[in-house]
Amino acid sequence: MRCVIPLLVASLVLAQMPAVARAEDDNNAAVDRYQRGREHFSAGRYRMAIIELKAALALDPDSPNLMYNVAYTSELLGDLGTAIHYYRRYLVALPEEESEERTKIQGTLRRLEGHRVEAAADAARRHEELRSPGDAGEPPPFGASDTWFWLSFAGGLALLGGGAATGVLALERENAVADFVAGNDGSLSERNQLVTEADRFALASDVMLIGGTALLVTSAALLLLREPEIESRPRASIGIDGRGGLLLSFSGRL
Image (cartoon, rainbow, N blue to C red):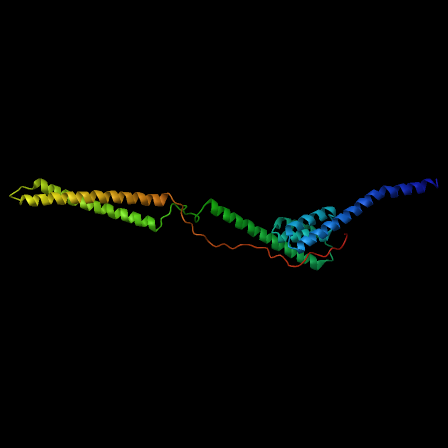
């Protein structure tokens, strides 16, 4: 019996040795990944730093310092959802007596959650503006009614009006020629003069009507075939005011 007890104790110790060795290996690997993450962070390579810090946290998931470092680096990268998640984990891991640190993290969480709400609202507004251009309740802008459109439109109307007026004058001259009686109404040369005037007014009317129609068609093309110019409005952007400085010094379990 005296020999059995030492053997049992020895077997229990030997059984625990692989687990202790694995824990020691994880501990060393976590320290290495943390150090690499800290080097990337110090050099401003935040995306590389977050990869190493998350790997270190996976090896040592109970380390408050790693939770904070992952949260802080995620905040600097603008990943608010990840930052908020790890700040909450860090807050839960903090001892109750760390009242000052807990108050600071609670304030950080309120700030980031407010930023996230504002950013979501701003993104929704931009999406709505892209989906429905123009002010609410007003029809979307149609065509480009700029200076060239109005010049061609006004010119077309003016030519059509001039064509109509010269057409009336041409008809008057043609009617006068039809009613003209040589001798009673004048000489033959006077009649020929009326014929010439009628032809000139008719030609001028045709030219102006054709030109006016062409200008109106051009103005319609300028209005319908071009994109409207939408006035851009300045918008306020929301930024992340990350706290400067290096990561927390490595302490605690690692």
